[in-house]
Image (cartoon, rainbow, N blue to C red; front, side, top):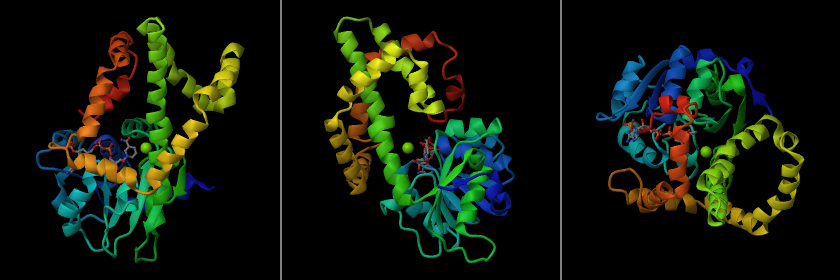
Length: 347
Ligand code: NDP
Ligand code: MG
C-alpha cells in the first residue's frame, strides 16, 4: 500500500484556496490553526451564539457565521458533529456554496450513508487524521503530525493543474498529516472500519473489558484502588508497548509469568461468541442500521446534547464505581492528561 509523505504533496494547492472550516471543536480547532500556521487562508464558520467564537478569534483566526463564510470558499471542511452535519449542510452550506466548491470531511459517515447528498459539480474528499483533535494540534506544533487517511468520493475539479486527490494530499500536508504518513482509502472503507474499530475494540470493547475486570476483582473482595490500577491505569502502559513494537514486543517487555498468563487466558476472554458478536456489530454498521439508530436517538434530544440512549448510558458510566475511585486517584497524579485538559475544546 502506498503511503504518502511530505514530498508527495504540494502545499501550494491548498495555499491557493479559500478554506472554510465549519466548527471549532476537537478537530476544527486543530485543522484551523494548523492550516493557518501552514500559510493557508482559513475562515472558521460557527453559529452566531457559539461559545467558541472568542476562542477562534483569540487564536488570530477569521470567524464568521456559516452562511456567510461558505460564499467565497473554494473548500469547505465540515467539522461539526456528525449528527448535525446534514442539518447545517442543508440549511446554511448548500444554499450559499459556490458551484464548484470542494466539500471535505474528516469522517465519511454522512456521505457514505447518504445523509448528505452534495449537488453535481462539487468534488467530495476526506482528510481524516487518525487521532483526537488535541493530538492533531499538539503534534503539529512540535513539528510532527498524526497519520491521516484521504479518500476521494468524486472528483469534479475542472482545471488541468491538479486533481481532487492532489487537493486532499495538500490539505493533509498543511495539517501535518504527511509528516506522519497518509494512506488512501474510500469513504466506505473509512466509515465502516472506523465505526467497527471504535465499537468493537477501541472504545466499546476496551471499556467493557476494563469494567468487567474491575468488577470481578472488587466483587471478590479486593480493594477498588488496586482494581483501578490493575484494570484501568495499566492499560495505557501495555497498549503503548503494543503500539511501539507490536504484540511480541509487549510480551518481551512483560514478565514470563504475565506472558504465559496472556496465552492461557486471553482466548477464554475473547471467544468464538465474542467474534460472532463482532460480526453482528459489523453487519449492523454495513447495513446502515447503526447509523439510523444513532440518528434516531439524536433526533429525540431536545437540546442537541444526546438522545435518551446516549444520556442514560452517560449517566450509568458516570455512576460506575470505577469512575469514582478513578477521579480520586487521578487527582493525585497531576502529571496525567495536562496537555489534554488545556487543549480540550469540548465543555
Ligand atoms: P466536536 O463536537 O468537538 O466539535 C463540534 C464543533 O462544531 C463545535 O465547535 C460546535 O460549535 C460546532 N457545531 C455544532 N453544531 C453546529 C452547527 N449547527 N453549526 C455550526 N457549528 C456547529 O466535533 P469533533 O471535532 O469531534 O468532530 C468533527 C468531525 O471530525 C466529525 O465528522 C468526526 O467524526 C470527525 N473526527 C473526529 C475525531 C475526534 O478526535 N474528535 C477524530 C477524527 C474525525 P460550538 O463550539 O459552538 O459548540
Ligand atoms: Mg473513530
